Amino acid sequence: MAAFVDSDGRRRKLFRQILDHGNIKNEGIPVGQIPSQIKSSFPAPTYRDTVLAQIFTDAKRYFLEPLLAIQYAHTLMLGRQGIMQRHEVAACLRALGGLDLAKIRNAVYDGTFEDLFFLMEQELVAACGPNNAGAMHTARSRNDIDLTMYRMVLRERLAHTMASLLAVRRQLVTLAWEHRASLMPAYTHNQPAQPTTLGHYLMAIIECFERDFDRLYAASVRVNQCPLGACAITTTGFAIDRHYTEELLGFQGLQVNSYGAIAAVDYLTESCSVLAVCMLNLGRLSQDLLQWSSVEFGYIRLSDGYVQISSIMPQKRNPVPLEHVRILASKSMTQAQAILGSLHNTPFTDINDSEDDLQPMVYAAFDDADRSLQLLAGVLEEVEFFTDRMASCAEANFLTVTELADTLVRSTGMSFRIAHEIVSAAVKELEGNYDADRMASSVQRLISAQNQRFPVPEHALLRKSLEAANFVAVRKVAGGPAPEALDPEIARAKELLAADTQRLQRQQDYFEHARERIRIETRELLATNDAA
Image (cartoon, rainbow, N blue to C red):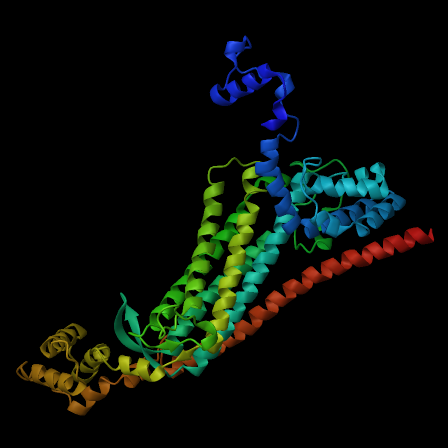
């Protein structure tokens, strides 16, 4: 307010009325007409402080390197197409190479330039002159520049998340193989249900993360489509080569339709959607691990490096890192979902809703996902499973009685429904006090009461059917926990892990090749120009 207040008491009074009432009717000035002497010039201080300054700070953090790469690629293309003369291109490339990036990163927004793009243009004008710097902007717009930058940053975030997901899969595959025969209870409705193995449980999680990787990778392929050349929204009348800039910037295809290149936001929404699914899967695993680490379960113990003490209770070993995994995953998922909510019902055109204010939240969602995955990989590398305790629980609480019913079907010819009724009656007789020998005897007695309708199986057969190891061993069908079914699946997971690692590495090598190609073609053009 101080900028508008001087010794003129009338102006001070008018300004106060504007603030308080939204009009200045009492001073004889029409409602809604603000005196020109108190109107702000661009940027208005409030707009500068609430929007432009923050956007500039975010742009320096996220977009300086992508913008610089776009400047190089577009300038090289203009020279290659004869739209700029070689000496002009050389002057611009030297100016780009001479930019003081530290100065730009440390710049404070004061409103003398609108955004990072115009600050860089101002620096280029100072370095190579207004004609050369101005020529660089031929056949492009901040619209297609922005969308290109956004995709370049997002593809890197996707790659980091996929790399961290591979690290988690690597730990899980190692543990699944190590514990492929370690008995444990499987749970339904959060209650112990049937025996399985820890390897079987971990393979279920691994399969989820394999699908997550596929979804993230597929999204990254669609993100990596180049919008540069769309200009404002309808391309240009200049004979540009979009495929050339696509390759220089490490894209693998064009976002072809220029209207969609600017207006479409599904590159964001798809990426955030699949990230949310991945974080949901991660959160469910972290919740199980937290439950297993409780004294009541006693299934796992985190290493000393991954527990925190209590400030008052000397005995506490708090598995706090798993809580951080959970909250970071939840935070990432929530931010990813917020992206979709922010873009819902927006018009299909160039809009700020999908740009400056939204992009940092996208990156924050991926950064939190990356932190969560890296932390879990570290925890898993040092976790200890109390397999004796898990196996003991697998033998208790009537968990094997489904196989007892199955054994009755196989050995007596009765239907499963009758077998289920007999076993259910035996369970009720024991009144919650499970004992395998008593269970077998109870079933024998109940079958005898059928008046010779079915033969009575031997006690040893029934007793064996109640062993957790036997329960697992007979479940050999695809997807089951028996070694014949589980071991090949773990081997397959190892092979897929190696293949996905190579797939991601090829993608990263392609990006690096593109960066090196810009450096090489810049050197070659400058050398040719100097020799001419």
